[in-house]
Length: 340
Ligand SMILES: NC(=O)C1=CN([C@@H]2O[C@H](COP(=O)(O)OP(=O)(O)OC[C@H]3O[C@@H](n4cnc5c(N)ncnc54)[C@H](O)[C@@H]3O)[C@@H](O)[C@H]2O)C=CC1
Ligand SMILES: O=C1[C@@H](O)[C@H](O)[C@@H](O)[C@H](O)[C@H]1O
Image 1 (cartoon, rainbow, N blue to C red):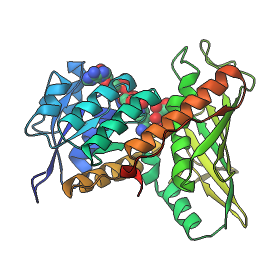
Image 2 (cartoon, helix red, strand yellow):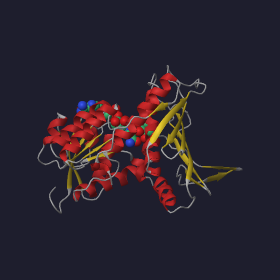
Image 3 (cartoon, protein in one colour):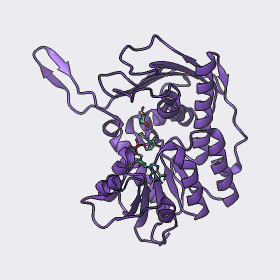
Image 4 (spheres, rainbow, N blue to C red):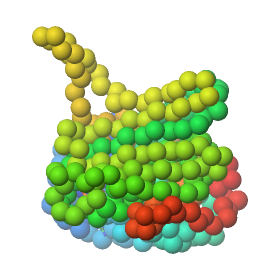
């Protein structure tokens, strides 16, 4: 990294999330300069950089990783491309912020953990942005200060307005509930050991075979219970909430709606459409912290180990979904590189 200079960033994948990250980095993150993007779909790449100044489009993502003027990389392409691209970044010795999930399988994440361990320094951050959401951060701070004494349970709601037809049921766990998996590990600073998945009556609004909604129940090492309702065809909007129950009180994270409308004997607030509205601050703060870390040679946010552990829990959840029985989480020993 060039000391005192802006961090020059390349973004791979300029779809929904990648285009959002390009715009946020280019307009709202200090010391960040987006110099290049790459997408299989050139049209999407062009649209993502339009009006943002001099950002070049690189055809092959591996050329972007290798480019001399790229200091650090954001990976926001499809899940099944993450492993190869993150490993290419590690090969090139470049910091990388990879969108969640780190990889679709825990074996793939372990290969990244091994490569990073061999390198002897942490370069990988995973896009678990809720760690930056002011509501979740306030809960973590309150928990640390002992405001509600020891945690006993965490109740979570995770609803999307609608999902694509025939979304695999496993995606409710590996694509959506993986955020709650990460939140629970991060809040309680302990691992999840067992997952049970219940299938309530299926919503008649689901197009295709998806089993929707699902209810996950997870247990942590010390016995905290975490339940997550995942409902990706909830129709009315995007709704993510959580309530932590402690020994002396509760801590809730609700949708931070800005305006309360009172009219003709009613009181209402809007429900957002999707995660880009709900977590806009979290994405910006995550990118800001990542860039600040890259500038001083520090890895920030969720690590490759966190990415691996979350995927291993999601895998246990998918086994539980398929078998109808509780499933134990298998984790390899945590390398010393990830002990702080
Ligand atoms: N942190 C969060 O809240 C969210 C994270 N995500 C994650 O972000 C990633 C992207 O998701 P979306 O933007 O929703 O998908 P998307 O389908 O809108 O965009 C993905 C883009 O990647 C491109 N792409 C695919 N393979 C590529 C390759 N090998 N090289 C270059 N470009 C390639 C596609 O052409 C597409 O433009 C996924 O990993 C997803 O799980 C998605 C939504 C929210
Ligand atoms: O990661 C995300 C999406 O992929 C997923 O589909 C949504 O359920 C999550 O809330 C969002 O943050």
